[in-house]
Length: 235
Ligand SMILES: Nc1ncnc2c1ncn2[C@@H]1O[C@H](COP(=O)(O)OP(=O)(O)OP(=O)(O)O)[C@@H](O)[C@H]1O
Ligand SMILES: [Mg+2]
Image (tube, rainbow, N blue to C red; front, side, top):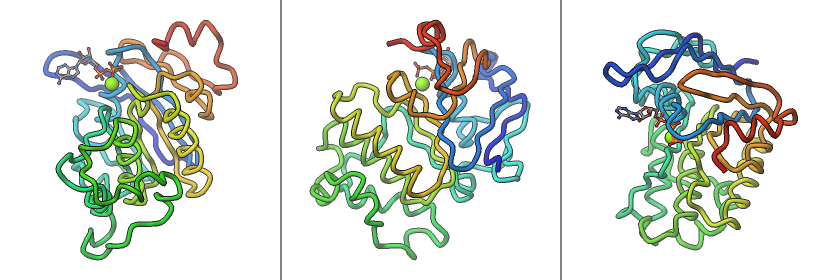
């Protein structure tokens, strides 16, 4: 079943035309990767999906519903979770409090949901160990794990990950990669990943390649050629 579909999405910053007629689709349970060099519009696209930016034209259909005009909190409640580039956990709150914030997206909000799902501790055991610690005192890789766990606690249907391995030690990159695979197999949600590490990109079922705000190539990641990789990945 198609979970997310965009039709001819165009997004601007003021007069700068960034996204150009972007059409993508993602099915339930699918892992899709968006690749492209620095500044082509990948983050702009994710922000348009979650409602932090308003496209000037085009449609976003999520779970059969047109969501273009919905504010970000309603999109979150309808099942889109977003882990921003740079993570944005709250440094002065504890790991536990940061995780609880993720449950605000659930029906009735945090008031009705206090217990943290054990799945996040199975995926990221380090978070259990550091529950009382301040989020800001975690390493970059641990903060990324916290940000993904927090997004997951809202029980999304679609998880948007913006360069989750950027600036992270290689051993934790592999931990994050396997956690994302496990999230998909255990929860059946879909993931849209923006990523530069080829190994991680290849875990996805399909890719879309973006250039100057438009989609210029797409297909199964098993068919990602060396030429495409060199053209669209920075590493
Ligand atoms: N707040 C903003 N105001 C104006 N222009 C912006 C703003 N944010 C981004 N841009 C511009 O929009 C274009 C797309 O930026 P975007 O952040 O979406 O790229 P990206 O593909 O995510 O890049 P990166 O790989 O560096 O994260 C860039 O040219 C950027 O300079
Ligand atoms: Mg970006």
